[in-house]
Each structure stands twice: as structure tokens, then as C-alpha cells.
Image 1 (cartoon, one colour):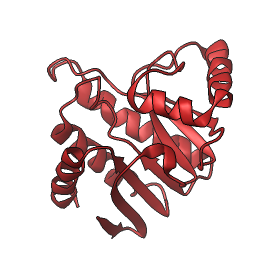
Image 2: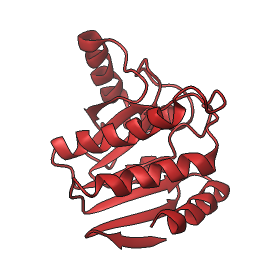
Image 3: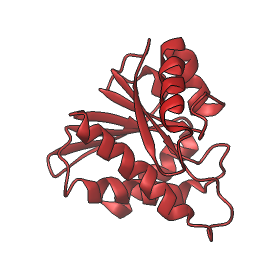
Length: 179
């Protein structure tokens, strides 16, 4: 699925984020920045040790990455040039600022991309794996945050790469609601 909004191409793709060739991909990282499971583990494995070395340098300088915040590294062996690591919230029922923290994860990733003159970026579905955020709610937050950010930032393309058919179909429903 593809649409144009404010001169920015918005795409939904079913696939593997480690194969994306946008200038930056976003890693649904944990606060340690040292790799983990799911998207985080896949990016660290495919990107190689350079990403981990840069994450360790960031940790040495600032400590862990708080939920909703983002940091940037090069992409190692990945086809992209950069990895933006952001920490999404763990779902605890929806009454613990999860929606605000998830929106911040997307917004801060977009801010960091803009600050680094990145024009094309790919997002996973942040927090919907092991952090158990409901995909429908997360997709609405992700898409609304991107839409609102395009009032301020100019990107050529923003992709959402969805790993499963189920997630892809939920995002497909949501993109029709948001845009």
C-alpha cells in the first residue's frame, strides 16, 4: 500500500526490516541498546558488531536510552546508512502513559532523522512484539504521529515494514482511518 501525503510517500510493506534500503531504519530497541530479541536482535545480527560498538559508546556517554527517546548509529553491514534506535513502552494495560511514550518514540526518531538530513526512513511496528502493545492501537499512534510530523518535517518517503500478514492488514485498516 502506498499513498502520498504532503509530498511524502507513505508505504506499508510486508517484509524484513534488515533488507530495507532507506537511508535509515528504526530499531525497536531496549533501553540497554545492547541488542535483544525480535527486531532488535535481527538488526544487530544483520548489521554486525559495528552497531553494537557504537551503541556501547553511546551508553558510555549517556547511559541507557529512556523509553520514548532515540539515538542514532551507522548501519554496519545493513543496506541502510543509519539505524535509529528507539525504546518503545511495555504495554501494562494502557494506563501508564504508554500511548504518549509510543508517540514520543516515533516523534523522536523522526526528529533525529530530520536533524541528520535523512529523507527516507523505515519503521517497524514499535512495541507490538515482546512488549505486547496491541497492534491496532499502536498502528493508529504510529500513523497519526507520522502524519502530524509531516506538518513540520519534509521527508521523501516513510515506510512501515510489517513482519506478519496480520500486522500488515491491521496497518492497512489503520492507514485508511488516519489518512
